[in-house]
Image 1 (tube, rainbow, N blue to C red):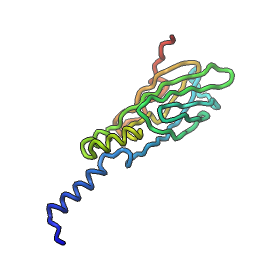
Image 2 (cartoon, rainbow, N blue to C red; image 1 turned 90 degrees about the vertical axis):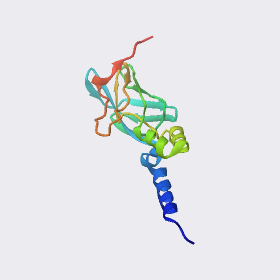
Image 3 (spheres, one colour; image 1 turned 135 degrees about the horizontal axis):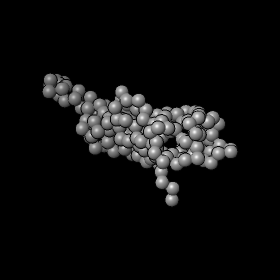
Image 4 (cartoon, one colour; image 1 turned 120 degrees about the vertical axis):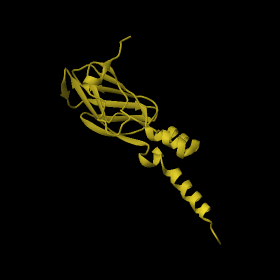
Length: 161
């Protein structure tokens, strides 16, 4: 059987384009996050935190790390420690730039798989919960070179209702 140069080129291009930009292959559906708690500027250890997004509930004791399922939904975090009022944070999810490459190279099916599985989204790698406050933390910076964008200084209080 004779394969033309055009056929080989088409096969190579098709193979490469299905892999380039696919967030589920590169980063997967899970992400490791670190959670810390603070009170009046000082680190507080031993708080029990529940993290909740559209893909499940996750538990960690601070300071600690946890593997969560990525999701389009914001991550709601509630930390409790005896003697303190709970601290809450709503952590914004962001779409990874890689997901847009998937639309161009992987097509609609690849983009739909990444969006549905959560692989197209990211949370900040460090979540800081201020005890006795409710805050909203910014989504991670899109640049791979940027440092995590969540610290006590980068959070803004949420208006109490």
